[in-house]
Length: 191
Image 1 (cartoon, one colour):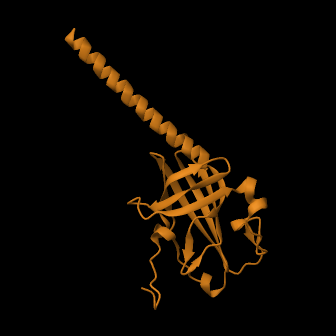
Image 2 (spheres, one colour; image 1 turned 45 degrees about the vertical axis):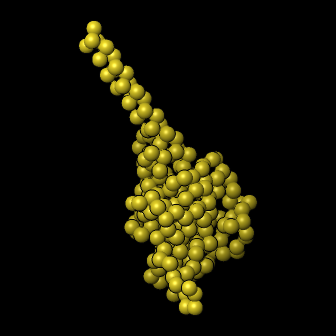
Image 3 (tube, one colour; image 1 turned 45 degrees about the horizontal axis):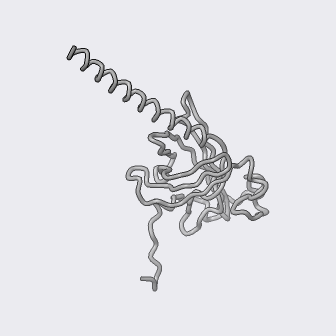
């Protein structure tokens, strides 16, 4: 009887652990499904002292479960665009993004996501610290109404630059960084 009692407890613990594991995986899958798609807004991108006017980002799941995928981010600056490719993975509701440039690697934490909006914080990939805010809208439903930052800019037509200005000096060999990884510049006369 004692052996049977121990087996029942062991079986119960095993079932609870399996239930917890399945719940965790399905939460990550739901996050991956919700983030899938095309977004635009502010991803806190910089080249030197110039902040991007806006960013388009697209998450495309690969395989079953929606927890892994590939994507592309296009950042719009005054003189041109920069395109970056990334892989992403959802683990414990944190979206880890690894880019073609390791300076851009980040994790998305403490966010809210709906059909139309995706807001939260971008953190350092390894430490999950140094948070900066991001705010995105659903591209397909909101682009015509809001565009980048809610204003019309004649250089952009549905996410493409009307004139290619990428040969300008600022775009010759640019290095993009996220605000979370951006070195703080001390200006003369400032304390």
